Length: 75
Image 1: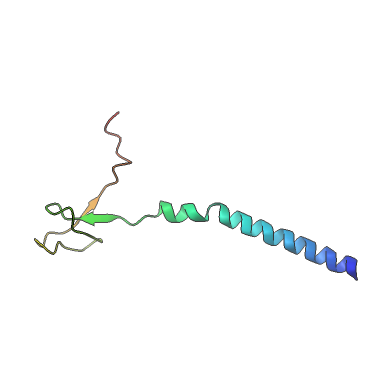
Image 2: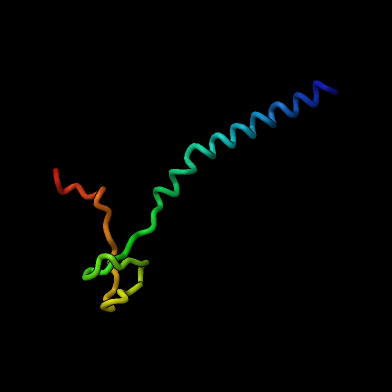
């Protein structure tokens, strides 16, 4: 009885441990890669929002702000 219980529980515990370790390896990176785009007013850069919003000071459509990290104009 003890052998059969051990032969069932041991693989189950190993499989569970493996699943949790694999799921935690890349879990944090996915949310970092899918960052929401930032939109800002061309005349008032301090006014930000989401796509389709307008500036509450001048009424202009907000434009997508590109990340400075990914621009390689220096080299």
